[in-house]
Length: 393
Image (cartoon, rainbow, N blue to C red):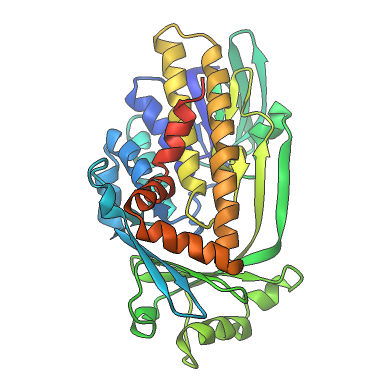
């Protein structure tokens, strides 16, 4: 039976960051992925400055930046009035070497890190390898994995589940996943069409509020990504149809044919696991919490989860720390998930829906006041949430 210190289940960006960070700490780590190839899911494409600071520590920020687009300025726009508030992240240049949002699809991060891991040993990164079962025996977790129809066991001191919303690890831990699902669906279109030629003054990141149909326009290399809400009762076939796509783009650029590269539908959840830890198993990212995508907090908060967890595992494995370290990880990350990630994404959605003059006036007041604006930027760049988590004992 193969023995390792940490087994990471799930090779998306969160799992890949966790495995890479542990390996950089000299901790014997294996990462496995049930799929036979890495996901090219287009949902997450924003890296905040706080996350880039972490990636810098594992020599990943600069290679990722080379693949993406820097967005120092992002817009909050009112679709009906045309008013725009521009927020400039270079105001945070005194505290981060990355005063911008990086627009880069998440798969590039996962591919970059797993390729590095694979180069360190043939069995460090295992595709097409699914977790079937896991149980604790003394001071270890015995994980049963399956590859090519063959099952085998791996013994690990700790197991991390970075295995997504339907997390098998969370199921094996037996923890609930409390919260709710939004009534509407979200529809994402990707297109090479030059929207910037038809909508004056676009930034790379644009949140456009409208009580009738809010809109997000995000630029990534070679593509515009368009996100809109949709009636939850509409069929998926209709939502990705040429007819619906034409209607969405007509409201953006007028009656001009627009070809799309991708069309994706997903239901959006606000959920938090009742615990992120059970014994020697822990969950991070979408396995631990789900939120709507407005603000780009989902993947980033998952990276923050696993970064925190790696610190705790290092303390246990290399500094004679005790299990209280894992309990503290649970307190810190669950606390900030509820107080910040969930609350802020719900607030962002309400703002996009254009609910009331009071919301508009509040954002105008924040934008006009340098102190309030800086606090807002720190919150949106997720430095504030990291400080909140660290304050939890």
